[in-house]
Figure 1 (spheres, rainbow, N blue to C red):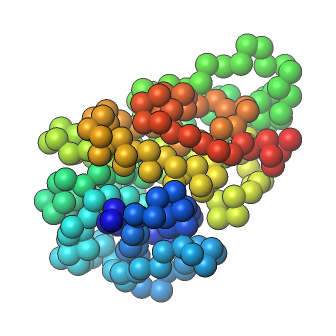
Figure 2: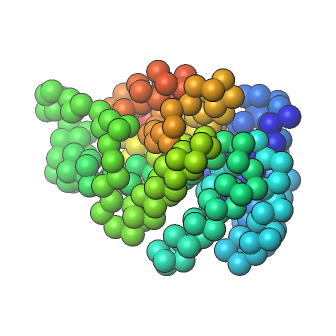
Length: 262
């Protein structure tokens, strides 16, 4: 059994992991920690629904108890404002180091952690990529490397950069940790009316494939220390480097945003 804890598992990303991880490998047993009364966004009847009601930002003892014996921890929870969010991140990572140092830790970052490096390509409404005038884009820009350091432009990006810094700290003490730069994930796995959404779109199944690949690579002792990866589907008009992710951990995305936008 792969004893998995999702911290914030009732949300959009967590609901996908609870649904698709057990489909990829029946060994996953997924438990979710969430605030009492939090909405469960999973719609699949087979999604794992082992829940712990807990405010991790206020109950350190409860958090540490929930972490005991875990093989895989995925940190998805967030809160506002930024100071409170960063304090919660520090609390979670310190607890993971103390309680389950053998577990793989996946910290929830975002493409927004490097927003300053790609917004110029995708956020100009009159630009050819944003307007889907792809024949005007010659040459196509080099995909943004996974080695790109955080380049946040607002509080959301800053909180994700802080998660990445903690993943590096775990790596420094010898624990496997990955920062997942999630793309655009939504519960319907469909189109959203956001500028250039097709460039960042990620199906929930592909997000689970990423987590599974990280865990299997960690178990094999081949995970690059403190790595951060973009988690994007196999989109035709992708601007992010997922080839390194394929090569290093065997990530195999199955979906393409053009099935929605083409």
